[in-house]
Image (cartoon, rainbow, N blue to C red; front, side, top):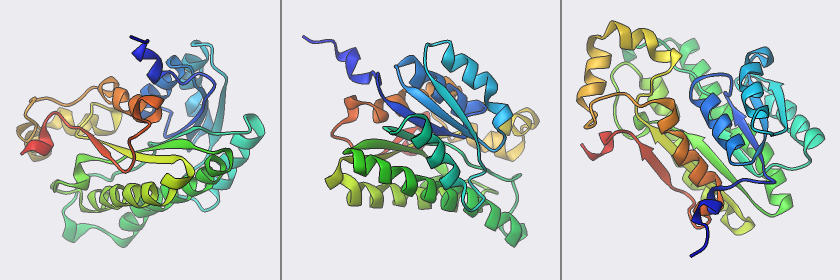
Length: 258
């Protein structure tokens, strides 16, 4: 038998990770670095990326950082320019950046809040994907992994705009996979349930309906740790998933079984 572990290696590859300054994005970047990828790290504030950068460089990888807000028009041009000038290619894109407001009932959602979520989670993600996929097409292939959510397919109380944005990304994943399969670009998604991050720390500490419902709907009975999500991302990014495209891989503690 060969060394199956080599299927997951990313040596010689360049990966872009959005939302890489903390939480899931940070551990994804570290995992890709551990598998041999050089990195372009993206966050709204470039200075917030320095800890992630240091950890990835400690793995012997080359790392560049980009301060870009996906919700702002033209951010894809900034990211693309850095990728081209720094590495001349891109093999993996992990669309991790996203926002979610405080939990609020649908009848209280403002237009400004709706627009902000859709602009960042959906519109910004699409145009960054479009820009970097053009490089992948020109070089003959690549892998795109978008972080969606259990909320893309299951209702979550108080998160209607967020769930709508993630459901749209789920369908976008299938559409782009279909369009780009013939040019060697694979497009997949990872859909976690609730993960222990700084963004939801207050909600978890306060308990209440949101946290209680989330735990009751999760057969494993707990929130995920960020490092429990990265294996799915590495798999889809790597040659181990060379015949997988248009797929959403659930990392949800069994939530989708109910």
